[in-house]
Length: 106
Length: 120
Image (cartoon, rainbow over all chains, first blue to last red; front, side):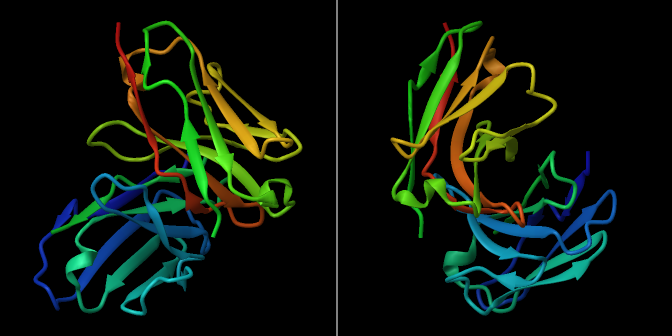
């Protein structure tokens, strides 16, 4: 099973600031990584797939990068609605599909 | 975008079977492009993939749950279902259904989730 480690667990950022979230895999994923945003009481929402392709309706301030074992989600100018928990998910070794433990942006 | 909706009991007794159904909003249920999956999230914790199923009935389960999980489809009703046997308090979670692309297994559209509590 591929283990995904997200860091930091909590990220404190001011509105308008830049947020950089990391996801590291225990083995190479090529580019088979997705990012999700989850707000309290809501289902996760797909943001990024294929490591860097924005999903429909994902604002351009969200960008994904990386390949292999190291991936990054960057929020260029944090808006109030971006404060949430972010999860990465790998689908290179399928199954089992696995998620990272999450990063809370506050 | 697809609409998915989970339904089922919110309270299950220990050692009994958890049963949930997900209804998909349109005829894309029989599309060859999608799998249909279940994910759960214990209160205050992260996400865990339970498994997914193709409209033809082919299944893929999380090895950690495989001995207790069964998924099925009802194409006439645009529904797929989850059964989890011998539940314990550790199975208390919000259960989500979602669709995955066959070519790339990321979760595209999600249901709102349903909280299932295991308690006597």
